[in-house]
Image 1 (tube, helix red, strand yellow):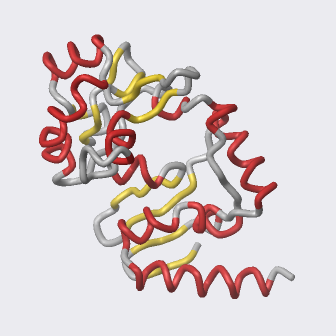
Image 2 (cartoon, one colour; image 1 turned 90 degrees about the vertical axis):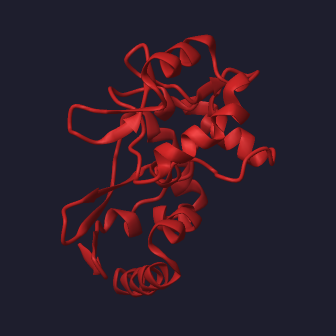
Length: 192
């Protein structure tokens, strides 16, 4: 475990490799599970703000859920999360022409239609951050559906912290990330 400022970072973030492989997993992280994506303060408002721009990109079932429940709800653990369709699919997920599940928010962002990429928890995945008051735990959430991403990450030699560089900086800042890089470099040297 590594301590940087008010975070405790799992060594998995430095040691393990990861690179999304959508051709194999088909974007399962957006449609599997029992709750939507965790939202931070202010993100529900962002979702409401961009909703008119992505409304037509959403499926009819997702539109019904949003109309009835809104863009977010509180899950069984008391966390605010995106609402879901059929007990598992994020309301903002959609399938492209090849059947790969993608995020309507990210798609609109990449097309330049909106100026917000998507919730930070989605951008950080497979890293999850849990706030314990005086510190935040930064952990790698290993999930069987991401096995192909682990394999591709090893093939390409991309550690998790490098794969998620931009998202980690957006979440914790440049200084925090620089400390993580220094630690990772020293850790790698010590491991031979």
